[in-house]
Length: 92
Length: 404
Image 1 (cartoon, chains in turn yellow, brown):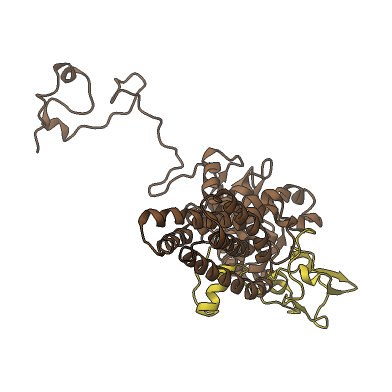
Image 2 (cartoon, helix red, strand yellow):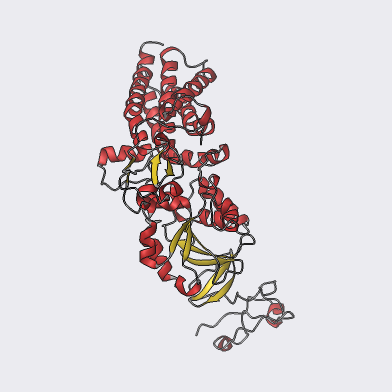
């Protein structure tokens, strides 16, 4: 995926290092190698590589990770603009 | 009791040993259906077909990929083939074209492949048939159980996002199929891309099975299993190869098809607005703008996916503008005998606008665009496209009035 880079400084991914206990699940489930675990602590090594899928946040046992997952499809987002974020959106 | 008139049947047929009707109408009441024997006289010109499979059950259709059934402590489990046949390839083509792909499902529940036993691994997948086929074709010489979740016919990744490939559904299926009576171990192997939909620790709490994260691609499952369920870095890295991008193009086109028909209709109406209205003028002018529109669709929905890593600019709407310029120039070039000046500019604008929009929509099919990023580029892209479309129509309608 080295050839594929998206916009910079937009992702909502946050890691609370104080809560982190270095289990490594985040780096195991991440499909973009965003995390690295050293010395019982995880750190974000490629923030812009994150696609906000939420795998890390869902599986962090101590809730140290926060991210706003969403549907990254333009027509879906347009519908949320028009109908609001909680509306029933038709998409594929 | 209705009497059957045999008078219009030939004498030959009357004497023939037919199972269709007896000469005595009363005998129809108790006519038993004889078992078909090889030397029975043929009925309707052909020998009777083979008997039904012993695995058939009233009210259920047997799937073509089921070889046999295995008896387990939790009942009979179908043993499936790892070979894909013509029906599966045709189904895959239809799904990729977007034809009834939300009905392309298999029944959720437990299946087996090879000679699965109490120590065999359990591989979990979605009930989208493309996912199911994609998995099983990699399982030659593998003995495993396959637990299919009810993801409403959606693939693993999208189902994880929609929360149907979820903690709750895994727990439900594990309990429903009685997995704890079938395998001695307490582990289930999940596709890595299902991770966004569930919390592994909650799955363990809910059904007693520990989640092992399998590789991203089914092709790596055999190596993964042979490597003691340890994944290499490569197995955990997403790719977006040319082949993987091309296969997404037909669905992009199918999704833009219906809105395009409305656009083409609107273009026809607008093409009729001019100093002198006539259907033939409207039609001739319609050719120009609709060709430019279609070229724009090709630029955004076909060229951008294919050329993705080589197109400059990170935002997709920008990549679409670039291809839109080329495809717009092509449409103007092809029709330069009929359209020039303001009308040609109008054609360029719609190609660029549509290409930009279609490219922007492709973000949803990529494995690397973040929703935050998409929303950010849309805040610029949509106004740009809207202005381009507005200018298109102003110039297209205004063109004939100014004689250019």
